[in-house]
Amino acid sequence: MQKVECFLLHLKEIYPSLRKPSSSTIDDWKTILDQLSVEDIVNTLKHWVNLNPKTPPTPKQFSASLVKKNTKKTNKRTFLPFNPETYLFNEDIKKQRNKHFFSTYRRAVNYILNVRLKEFYPKEEFKNFNYSARYERAVEKGLFADFADVLDYVSESRECYD
Image 1 (cartoon, rainbow, N blue to C red):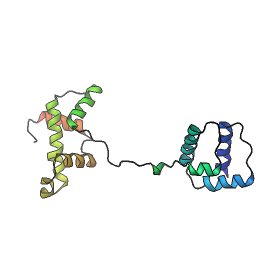
Image 2 (image 1 turned 135 degrees about the vertical axis):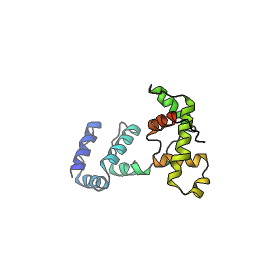
Image 3 (image 1 turned 90 degrees about the vertical axis):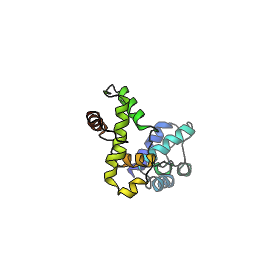
Image 4 (image 1 turned 120 degrees about the vertical axis):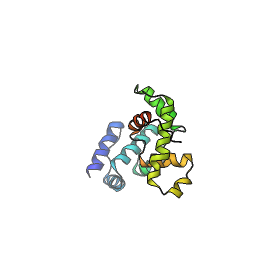
Protein backbone atom coordinates (compact mmCIF):
# COMPACT_ATOMS: atom_id res chain seq x y z
CA MET A 1 0.00 0.00 0.00
CA GLN A 2 2.98 2.30 0.54
CA LYS A 3 3.66 2.45 -3.21
CA VAL A 4 0.10 3.60 -3.85
CA GLU A 5 0.16 6.22 -1.08
CA CYS A 6 3.46 7.61 -2.28
CA PHE A 7 2.27 7.64 -5.87
CA LEU A 8 -0.98 9.42 -4.98
CA LEU A 9 0.95 12.02 -2.96
CA HIS A 10 3.14 12.70 -5.99
CA LEU A 11 0.07 12.97 -8.18
CA LYS A 12 -1.43 15.48 -5.72
CA GLU A 13 1.78 17.56 -5.88
CA ILE A 14 1.72 17.57 -9.66
CA TYR A 15 -2.05 18.04 -9.97
CA PRO A 16 -3.25 20.11 -6.95
CA SER A 17 -6.89 19.87 -8.08
CA LEU A 18 -6.85 16.06 -7.73
CA ARG A 19 -9.60 14.80 -5.41
CA LYS A 20 -9.17 11.97 -2.96
CA PRO A 21 -9.77 8.72 -4.90
CA SER A 22 -12.44 6.23 -3.92
CA SER A 23 -11.53 2.90 -2.37
CA SER A 24 -12.20 1.07 -5.64
CA THR A 25 -9.88 3.48 -7.48
CA ILE A 26 -7.21 2.93 -4.83
CA ASP A 27 -7.60 -0.82 -5.36
CA ASP A 28 -7.17 -0.30 -9.11
CA TRP A 29 -4.01 1.74 -8.50
CA LYS A 30 -2.71 -0.96 -6.15
CA THR A 31 -3.30 -3.67 -8.77
CA ILE A 32 -1.43 -1.70 -11.42
CA LEU A 33 1.44 -0.35 -9.32
CA ASP A 34 2.24 -3.62 -7.56
CA GLN A 35 3.23 -5.14 -10.89
CA LEU A 36 5.67 -2.32 -11.73
CA SER A 37 9.08 -1.32 -10.57
CA VAL A 38 9.56 2.15 -9.12
CA GLU A 39 11.60 3.09 -12.18
CA ASP A 40 8.77 2.09 -14.53
CA ILE A 41 6.27 4.06 -12.45
CA VAL A 42 8.45 7.18 -12.49
CA ASN A 43 9.12 6.92 -16.22
CA THR A 44 5.43 6.45 -17.00
CA LEU A 45 4.42 9.34 -14.78
CA LYS A 46 7.00 11.62 -16.41
CA HIS A 47 5.75 10.54 -19.82
CA TRP A 48 2.15 11.23 -18.79
CA VAL A 49 2.96 14.68 -17.37
CA ASN A 50 4.79 15.62 -20.55
CA LEU A 51 1.80 14.64 -22.67
CA ASN A 52 -0.97 15.80 -20.30
CA PRO A 53 0.30 18.55 -18.00
CA LYS A 54 -3.21 19.57 -16.84
CA THR A 55 -5.05 16.27 -16.39
CA PRO A 56 -4.12 13.52 -13.92
CA PRO A 57 -4.26 9.95 -15.21
CA THR A 58 -6.88 7.43 -14.28
CA PRO A 59 -5.65 3.91 -13.51
CA LYS A 60 -6.73 2.72 -16.98
CA GLN A 61 -5.03 5.63 -18.73
CA PHE A 62 -1.88 5.12 -16.68
CA SER A 63 -1.66 1.41 -17.48
CA ALA A 64 -2.31 2.14 -21.16
CA SER A 65 0.58 4.59 -21.30
CA LEU A 66 3.12 2.41 -19.49
CA VAL A 67 6.72 3.13 -20.38
CA LYS A 68 8.72 0.13 -19.34
CA LYS A 69 12.46 0.07 -19.47
CA ASN A 70 12.45 -3.27 -21.30
CA THR A 71 10.00 -2.30 -24.02
CA LYS A 72 12.38 0.06 -25.76
CA LYS A 73 14.22 -1.53 -28.62
CA THR A 74 17.91 -1.48 -27.96
CA ASN A 75 20.73 -2.33 -30.25
CA LYS A 76 22.93 -4.80 -28.41
CA ARG A 77 25.89 -4.05 -30.65
CA THR A 78 28.21 -1.55 -29.14
CA PHE A 79 29.35 1.43 -31.15
CA LEU A 80 32.67 0.72 -32.78
CA PRO A 81 34.55 3.52 -34.47
CA PHE A 82 35.23 2.85 -38.13
CA ASN A 83 38.94 3.42 -37.75
CA PRO A 84 40.17 2.48 -34.23
CA GLU A 85 43.64 3.97 -34.49
CA THR A 86 42.27 7.36 -35.56
CA TYR A 87 39.64 7.27 -32.82
CA LEU A 88 42.16 6.33 -30.11
CA PHE A 89 44.67 8.89 -31.38
CA ASN A 90 42.06 11.68 -31.32
CA GLU A 91 40.81 10.67 -27.86
CA ASP A 92 44.36 10.85 -26.50
CA ILE A 93 44.83 14.28 -28.08
CA LYS A 94 41.60 15.51 -26.45
CA LYS A 95 42.78 14.23 -23.07
CA GLN A 96 46.27 15.67 -23.70
CA ARG A 97 48.00 12.39 -23.07
CA ASN A 98 49.28 11.48 -26.50
CA LYS A 99 53.02 10.98 -26.66
CA HIS A 100 53.28 8.79 -29.77
CA PHE A 101 52.96 9.36 -33.49
CA PHE A 102 49.94 8.14 -35.43
CA SER A 103 51.98 5.36 -37.04
CA THR A 104 52.61 3.94 -33.55
CA TYR A 105 48.85 3.88 -32.90
CA ARG A 106 48.35 2.01 -36.18
CA ARG A 107 51.03 -0.54 -35.24
CA ALA A 108 49.51 -0.96 -31.76
CA VAL A 109 46.05 -1.67 -33.20
CA ASN A 110 47.59 -4.15 -35.66
CA TYR A 111 49.48 -5.78 -32.78
CA ILE A 112 46.22 -6.29 -30.89
CA LEU A 113 44.33 -7.57 -33.93
CA ASN A 114 47.06 -9.81 -35.35
CA VAL A 115 49.08 -10.98 -32.35
CA ARG A 116 47.10 -10.79 -29.11
CA LEU A 117 43.77 -11.88 -30.60
CA LYS A 118 45.45 -14.90 -32.20
CA GLU A 119 45.95 -16.36 -28.71
CA PHE A 120 42.18 -16.82 -28.30
CA TYR A 121 41.36 -18.71 -31.50
CA PRO A 122 42.67 -21.74 -33.39
CA LYS A 123 44.94 -20.89 -36.32
CA GLU A 124 42.50 -22.03 -39.03
CA GLU A 125 39.57 -20.13 -37.54
CA PHE A 126 41.68 -16.99 -37.08
CA LYS A 127 42.72 -17.04 -40.75
CA ASN A 128 39.07 -16.71 -41.79
CA PHE A 129 38.50 -13.48 -39.83
CA ASN A 130 38.56 -10.28 -41.84
CA TYR A 131 39.63 -6.96 -40.32
CA SER A 132 36.20 -6.01 -38.95
CA ALA A 133 35.62 -9.47 -37.45
CA ARG A 134 38.98 -9.29 -35.70
CA TYR A 135 38.22 -5.80 -34.49
CA GLU A 136 34.81 -6.80 -33.06
CA ARG A 137 36.24 -9.86 -31.33
CA ALA A 138 39.13 -7.86 -29.86
CA VAL A 139 36.66 -5.38 -28.39
CA GLU A 140 34.50 -8.21 -27.01
CA LYS A 141 37.56 -9.77 -25.37
CA GLY A 142 38.59 -6.40 -23.88
CA LEU A 143 41.94 -6.34 -25.62
CA PHE A 144 41.85 -2.55 -26.03
CA ALA A 145 41.51 -2.00 -22.26
CA ASP A 146 45.26 -1.66 -21.74
CA PHE A 147 45.92 0.20 -24.98
CA ALA A 148 48.37 2.63 -23.32
CA ASP A 149 50.61 -0.29 -22.28
CA VAL A 150 50.38 -1.77 -25.79
CA LEU A 151 51.38 1.61 -27.24
CA ASP A 152 54.46 1.77 -25.02
CA TYR A 153 55.41 -1.81 -25.88
CA VAL A 154 55.00 -1.28 -29.61
CA SER A 155 56.90 2.00 -29.60
CA GLU A 156 59.87 0.34 -27.87
CA SER A 157 59.91 -2.66 -30.20
CA ARG A 158 60.43 -1.71 -33.81
CA GLU A 159 58.67 -4.74 -35.27
CA CYS A 160 55.89 -4.60 -37.84
CA TYR A 161 52.64 -6.34 -36.84
CA ASP A 162 50.71 -6.33 -40.12
